[in-house]
Image (tube, rainbow, N blue to C red):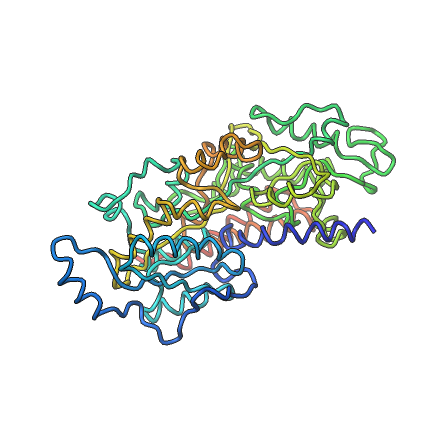
Length: 482
């Protein structure tokens, strides 16, 4: 009976989580499976990028000295259904303010990346297209992303000081701005207030450390006889409640984006900033110590549910149903968890490690197609959705890049979003931005070897040594000769 209730609650969370599958480390071929909204213009198979010759000639005669950008601008997105509502509002408002520009939204919720790659090859990609963080370096290396600094610093530019500094840097590669931020979420520590009160524990604070989190997780982990994980009588084979679910709330224990904050907090990295090597980074003492701390939460301390544990509950939302007392995830579950009447929870930035604080983002941005034929009009819309009033519409399930919009929405004072925003200062760049083959070479080998730690019991050092060697061999295959 309880599991039926849990399944109903879980359905609420799935809707929010699907938003972030593309913008959190996966490549563009991993979009949510959903339909296209009825009021969205679907892409036509034979559509050219821009076809407005007559309109441009008329505009040129009428406007003369101050010719306003005009024409049809195609915009590509993987979003669908309810996720398109902000798009529709933004487009309507923009077109009302810019009557010479017509925005054609092309929503492709299935196989978005496959279609986009085909459009790049044919030279027919949308003028503006949404990009998940896993594809940024790949698309830039292919030359299909228009550099934005000339537009930003031009007479019709924007003041980049409006952005949170850490967020502005996410659109940059090698010091050049290539994308504008759509939305994002750092990792967050959630805690069940009632569980903490029952255990007599102080709530997490910005000063929390790894040790504080582990100590609390041990006290909060309870077996079938009511013993917590600090008790000599604790039965690790009969756990009824775990102290923390990490690195996410859906049970992927090798999700690297969720582990990156721990690695950064230990002073480690998984690849050189120039993308040249993982050796000495992925297997460094700092990275190994972070991964060891993480693995010990499962294997030694038994305070986190394993993949087998999570699977046994058939996709149940473990934090929402009280099966875990803390959760390490993104911002996206907040709307669903606040809708659960008996769930009393708080949020906090992540704890600090031996080297201090650190966090990572799930991020999505807007790119301008380098081969687009109407870049001035495209820039007008990019400004509107990336830095203007349109940017507000995309903050419902994530966070705005424009700092003042967080203030306008009251997010800085919000009991849930406030601590999250404070932790933005600790965000570091993700490895996807350092090499276009990171996902296939670096992350794939990291995850494969971490899986072996859990399934085969090999040491973390051996796993990371093997992962680094294999990753570098893979990267070398694509390195230019000579």
